Image 1 (tube, rainbow, N blue to C red):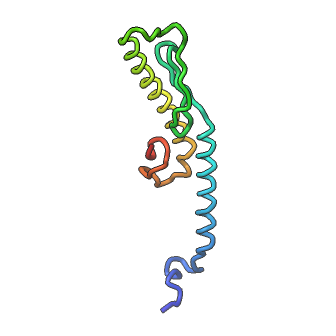
Image 2 (spheres, one colour):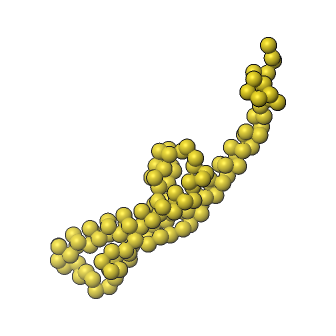
Image 3 (tube, helix red, strand yellow):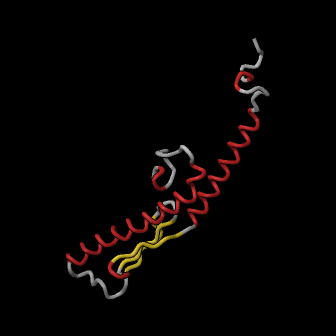
Length: 124
């Protein structure tokens, strides 16, 4: 019987250091991609630009713009509509951010679907 249990898998032994280095490189690439996503901003708009919401690539809300003259704030229905439009604009921007995250992290995430902290369809 052989002393090395990995010889049965193809001989030559098993290089744990190479595996750890590869894992470290993947972790660095993933962290770099996440940093780029944090710096990327996408817009979601509704009602012909009456409301624009800015979201970064990891889905964090970073800005809301309301076009002047669209809402005076004195009518409760206007305010309710404004809230609905902000939500709709956020959903639009978030969908774009999720798509960006999927493109940026897809090759790096591999089998990481559903893990916390993974943007887009990978967990956010």
